[in-house]
Length: 128
Image (cartoon, rainbow, N blue to C red; front, side, top):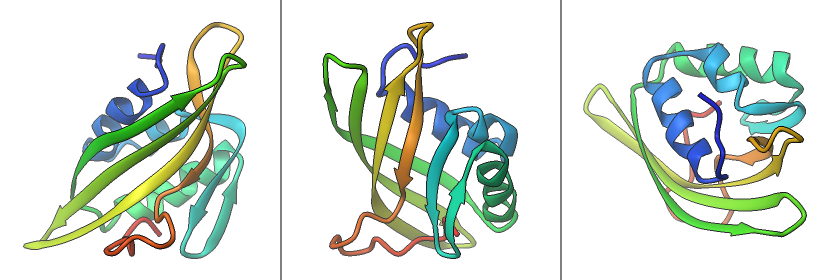
């Protein structure tokens, strides 16, 4: 199911994450997108998929709340969310920042994703 509004990316993301669906997560990114990870940057859908394979191997259940969406008339959107991952009785949480781009078919895909927005308490994560 594609995202026809930028904030729909968050709902699709948490659904795929909680199903441990690395392909579904990677499909939410543009072909040349960048995902920030603890190991550095995953560039391109293939590298992003592999990053999520690694992340999902030890991840728990995610909750995510969209905090803000700022969309331009030019097909760009800036999104912020608060997320928490519950695993083995522990909770890791943070604030994420993403940039999404409207595609020619009217759907939205992430092009930049920073799951650990700097400067926010609790923003260390298991997201690689």
